[in-house]
Image (cartoon, rainbow, N blue to C red):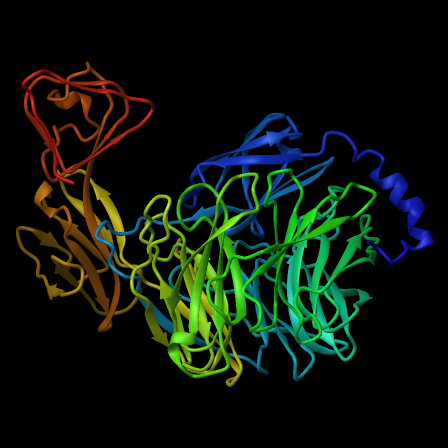
Length: 635
């Protein structure tokens, strides 16, 4: 299918550099668990990993993870601060492997499904930013913002200077482009562990590669390579197409189809070559491709390409099945009818939206009209692990004219939610996933008015509080809009003793409040039950299990802060024997009651009536309930 020849001067380099990559290539088969919080331990299963921990480099998105242990078939790592929903990569001296999407960061959300809440924060920008990406460029553990302007022909990097719960950015670093900025992609092109930047421009139609030479606290990008494309670049996907250990570029262009740009780099020698042109996706205009994503859809270890057309005449995705080898890039085009209803796809994303461990697709659709029913999100669910067949799901009405879409867990329940940026209604639509197994079910859409015609939407934890925030560029205003996630958090306590809560805001005047439903709050004062109601730390005196399900929050300088849902918990450890009613067998030193959420860590015997609010079994533990005895589980 290729009509491009590899440059002759690269052949010798390529032969030498790939001779050792034909063997022991790393491969990620699965990760467990797939959902977790910062600091949690996860296992990466596969093959070709190094038994020397330091020879394995693991990234959650662009956040490096600490290696706990490693062997040929398993790596154990800690989830790093700044991990985002997206690709997880493992790099060894023999190559790299990527699973995308790999891991879903979450937080302790409330049990009663209170909708997420957000603060609006606006960052002034020198120009209108057409496209924004998020990555930790200076590797300080904080995700930075990377934006391109199609008017001023500039690349901006906004270094994240946020502290916990306070979002701020330094003045942007500016790099001049050779053309009008249209799209941007982030990936490590020279295998030095740092995220580099690829910018697609029009007039002229090309990619400009910036090699990341930044250090903590300082952004430094070196313009390195110009790559001419067949037409105007619209979107960029990055991944190792041919399993040679190097990140290649897949570019959706505005006219001819999809450009495959192969990475021949070695160390500081950065070299790419346009090697393949895949046939157009759609018939109008002139086969324009709107977007591209990489994912191994059939489980063969190779990254396939999913693409969409910029046309209201098509209701389908196009899959390019990867048949490549190390020395030959080859794709086979297939049509997938998966999107319900007509309309141009403004953007699409992938993830497991129905909790069946298969990767589905979600598309934001619009027609050229201001009528709301023509603006929707469609969910297409995958039918089998090795299959590329999708079932068409229902369409969900959003704000008007959604041009972008992103996915993350916004309320901390472990389910993948969806957000869209809507240009005509000047809003963001949030779709909360109800998490029903083997089916797609979302709560009614919540629209947040943001103004400025949001052109691009992304999700990442900007202020390192464990919650994903929403980031948007603007077609109308010179700003970046951030919806900072201040959703309620669950805190786990034993139902005894004194327990403390801490304000996450800093100020001069504090007032703690309480609520039974998480919505209606009233002030509390010092007394027998509480101490520190007007300070940054609240003490709940002599807590009992009746506090389970109550909410507390602290107003700082008359501004309400994050609310906390108290959850009374207890774990059965079997320290002394197997009896439920022995207090010494429980982590809290008391026997649980009907207000307590219980985790059973080892086999347990119940010889008299017992109760708990929730029951979770771990480590294959068994609960034996004697005849005539009742275990009451409230929920």
